[in-house]
Length: 245
Length: 314
Image (cartoon, rainbow over all chains, first blue to last red; front, side, top):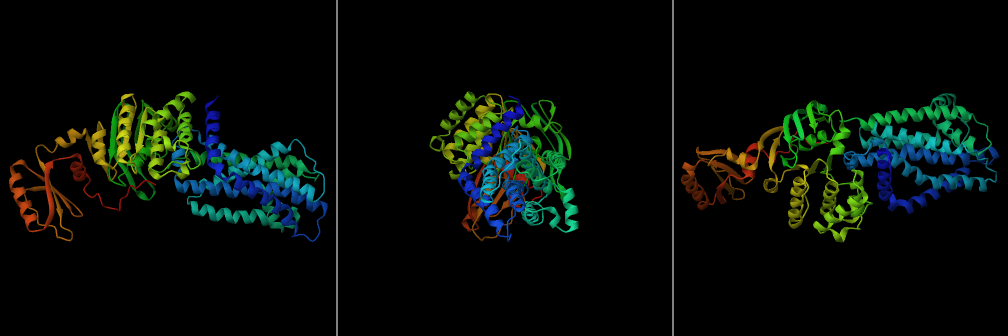
């Protein structure tokens, strides 16, 4: 087996075993988030039209992945940096991207139940049929990777771990409330719409919408923009994790 | 030489000079001690060897490979026990040791056999299946040692390996350190425990304020003292320091402890002087003996209790 893959699988085992104690708690949290997103957010709306229902159902998995990548990943990294975990792991002959890849795989695996549950609950609760295309697989992987790489970049670029926590809190608000994930973009003021033309968030939401429902979205553009952000995030991550003090 | 460090200087941001022109080399099969007080720059030097930190200037080669340019080679070649605790909360003792052994390139069966050997040797059987989260700090450090020793590299770097470890297991650990050296690894032992180091190392460097203050075998470092003896006085609590006669050389005063060098010709006079201090209750006790490595260390480091040190590694 090539060294990179061997390191990846061994690190995956390490990360998974470290995380094992939290599995049952995580599962409970995932159910809570899925139920909250589908049932809870629908209380915001006086009446649920089929379009709103589809936005909520497709927005939930996107939000779960975004929060995991942009908020939870940086916070975990910030804690690990404070505890000196990286000094040890990075002294091992493990390619750093193999370690982070294992970390990201574990993170993605842990949010997968919530993602699937949110979609299934949404379709049942709002009573509409899903139109699942095979493109959902690359779409979900791309969203997860993009969010995670941006999360890593934030976690390693910001010098003080405490600052990482503050910034990710602010970002979670921005993503939840001021991003066209759970609602169409045209409800936002013009300047915010302009910002979201460049940011990947709306395109991530489009990827989910376009691959599990019949909502009309420009999937090609969404793949290109999220793909581009993913590449940038990857390059920045690669640079920051390999730099030396 | 297996590891060659030449004129390494590391200046951190804010102009903190953690290593200042350090040169040393370590051969295969050698146990080399890196001794110095907290913040002397020991961990910074280690971090540069394994490529976690980049030297400001100087060169480090391992097996003639420039490890500053190839940090990956350094990590392949060095197995490392960090001074900080290892992240093994969710792993059992056996899992942690086996995982690192395999990450370091060991074959599954070999790694298991060696892990069992280490666990048996250090009498850690009762914790074999215990999760890292629930074991004590001392056992955790033993596990960290096993993780560095399970598939040892060309160089085994141990940063304070015996902190929190009981005296019996310390002995076994030191025996294993020497055994690893006999099997061909070079061992770089980082510590401020001079007494233990003296018994284990073949050669050592004493570093302070980022500089090498002395280097050689324990015997050669002590030899510089010639036939001189060392007189140690312990002051009565609260008693003022007595004025020291001129024939007492290189006094080092740390809290209640005064250490001075005495030439052979002055020994009788010095004993009489110390006895009179004892009789007048100025001191609690005194002792005279040949120079120990600790005496040499204290002479070289001078201010072991100084807290405001520049080189404390981040």
